[in-house]
Every structure is written in C-alpha cells, then in structure tokens.
Length: 569
Image (cartoon, rainbow, N blue to C red; front, side):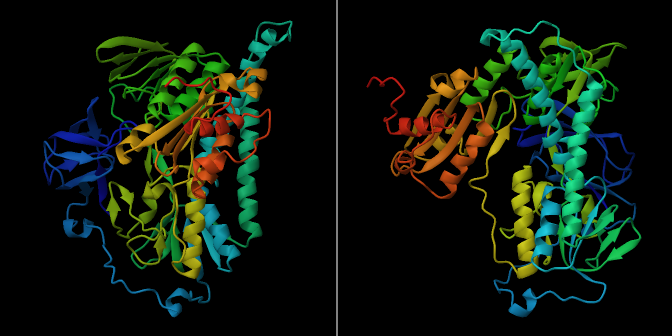
C-alpha cells in the first residue's frame, strides 16, 4: 500500500505550510531518509525527508501551494501501483437509518462481534465497554497496554513532576519555619526510575487484568485491516469481526533540523529513561509536554532553556494565562526563548550547540525534542478511509467512511487527550454493539497542563470568544486573595471566567494556580449542564478552599465578588 506524504505540523499552533520546492518529480525513485521537498511556515523553513522507499507516484500539491497541516501532499509506492487506488473510499450517505436487523450483530462460530486495534485509552475502554454490553471482543496491541499516556506520557511525567514539587517544597520550608539541617538536595535517578516504572507497571497490569476480567481476548502484535474487513495480526493470524474499532493512537511528529540525529537529542521516551540529570537541558518545543518535562528537570536540578517557534509557550492557552505561566516559570529559574527558528544543532562532543536564526546560540548537555504528535495510521492496512488532513474522518458516532469500522481517540485527531479518548472509546463501543445511537459531545472536555502551578481550561479562550460573540464579560480572581492558597504558600495565578453578557452563558473558564486540574472539573460540569453565571453563585462553596477562587471569579462577572476591591467605573 502506498505511503502518504503529509504536510507536517511543526508546532502546536501551526495550521498550514507552503511548499517551496519539490526536489523529486513524479516517477522518480526515492529512498527512506532522502530529502524530497522543502516547505515554509510563517516561522521556519524545513526540508522534508521520505519516510519510505519506492517511487514518487503522485504529487498532489505543487510548488507554491499553501496546504493545511497533516493534509496529504504526495504518495510514495511501488512502481506499478495505480494512483487511482490511492483515493479515499467515500461512502455515500443515503439518509436511510439502520434497520433493527442491521443493528443486530452476526455472531458466527469463531467470529468476534468486535475487534479493537490498539490498547491505549480509547482502545481498552472500547473493548471493556463492548464486552460489558454482551459482545464477544478481541483486542490487538503491538506494544504495552495503556498507550502513550500510561507508559511514556501522562502518568510517568506526573511522577517526575511530583519529585520536582517535593524538592520545591523542601527549598521553601525555611520560610515556613521548618529548618532542614542539610542544604544539599541529592537526586538518586535509579530510585526515581524505579518508582516511576513501578507506577507504570502497576497500571498497565491493571489494564490487562480489567480486560481479562471482562472476557476480552488479548492478541499481542501488529493489527491491520485487510480488504475483506478482517483484522490481520502480525501478517499471519486472521480475526473475523462484525465490527472493528481502530484505536491506533498517535506517534511523535518529526522535524528536519540539521544535526537532530545526535544521540544527545532525546525524545520524551528517552528523557524518561535517562540515568543522570543533565546539567543543562534545552527543550525544543514549548508545548504541553515540553513545558511539563522542562519544569520536571528544572526541579531535579537542570538548568532548562525552552525554545519555542511561536510567540509564546503552550500556544493553545488563553494569551493572558500563557503570559502568566511564562512569568512564573522564569521566576523559578527557567529560560524561555520564543519566536525562535532553530537552523542547526551541532554536536561538539560534550555539548550541543543549538543555533537560532537571529538569536544567540543555546549551549546544552542534552536537548529534548517535543513538537507534538500526529495520528498513527498503521492499523488501516489495506482499507481505504476518507481522511482529512492526515486524520481518519469520523462522524458524531465515531464511525468512519467505511460502515462498521469506528475510529476513536488520537487517530481521528479531533482532540488528542487521554480523557477525551476514554469517552470516544466508550461511544464507539456502544454504537458498534447497539447501532449508532449515541453521539459524542466535547464542549465540556477540559485541557490541563501539569506545571507548577497547574494550568487548566475548558471552552473558549478570550480571543475565540470575542471573535464569536458580540458582547462578552470577564470575571477574574487572584489566588493571592485566596486564604487556602496563602496558607499553603501557593498564592500564584488566577481564575478567569468568560461569559456571554446577554444571557449569562459560560463560554470558557481558565485557571492557573493550585489544584487547577481538579477545580476545572467543576467548570466542565457547569458548562455541560448549561448553568448560567447567576445560578453558579447561588452555590455555597466550602471555606477555606482553592475552589472559592472559582466562585469569586464567577461573582466578578456580575460585579458581585465580595473579596475583590470595588472596581471604579
């Protein structure tokens, strides 16, 4: 099957790129790793390498074209492969509803009602849910169960962040009257690794145990869909299924920078397995993962420099929140360089020199490359789906263009978060078993950055709200005025509530401060239940709590906050 060449996403806020020049023509042979074209974004120029060997079969977008990120721009395949076979299969919607007979799954001997490809958040939840609904289910996983989040993402990074938090508390102890004899804090990375690995193992084992307890058959290996809509495991074993749930997750984005192949340039996987804390760590990409990992290692003792291509770190955040986070982490000793285009990385033996266009070079012992993730489409095999910008297109039921195949989680690229994948997997399973009845709702899905202080948001940013609504109002409350935060030495940040001024509808909530990841769930519930601002402030909040800051911000929307000085008109 032909390999898709896509417009890469070089940064969280990048939406499109321009093709400068194709270095190969249609029909030319290409080798994996060979530079085949040049592209330009608003911040950088890049050379794109071929990710497969073969013939450049088709150039979809030509020199000078501006193309959305992750959209297919060309194909590499076998010499005699037809271009016609490369086009996605589009299933015409006749408008007819599934009959009750269609909804009933055919359960043949040795057949599965549902086969799930991928054991990450979307996949294992889908498998368990389908089994709970009475289906005969199999799941295929090529690596460790739990996916990126559990093994090399959300969970292990939180173990590291907790270590950094503990060290920070120790250093601040004297200001609270707690005197510690030794001023030197040592980090035993073997013990750090041992604890982290123990947590991961416990959780991955727990996922496997849950699957087995629900009667799900487990297959270890690479699962792909053939043209007969069967799932083939390791190119040898065929699993027949009435319905398929493709939950292949995502993989790290690639970027072509001269010198990036140095063994001192690490992925997040590499950094989580490192045996020594680097004296100086450069973080290439100031997104969620880069900022979290940077702060983790800053806490462990590294001098950390974040290098971000865009004009601010974690670009999807509300501008005001991103600015506050930058100010706080700089105060903690980290360096942040924005609007930075890296031109070259030079390995000087004991150090790395990272050259930045128009700025002073950064010298570091190690560098973390963290530029986001893209859907992993390996599981599609011989099946052709309608795709959109390199993502599998799904409807509100999580069903793809191929009837009977569902694609929840990162493979659809809608909102690449583990907790969203949980819900998508649940919806996909329910529809696969019972027929397409349950749709996905993502309005109230929060996003969290586990820095210190934590950052959390749900709904629209201020910029988005002003673009969409004629009249908005904003309420704010600082944690510096929150009793619990002051008593806990955590009086950093604020809560920001954005509402429609006409009806009091809550449009967005943004928090930077202590327990933001926990408090945001309250805001998600408020938005899901469509509770208005005036209804929120009728609730009595416990005192003293961090959550009171949320209450006060809602009250401030209406100008009724008691613990804020009266605003001058």
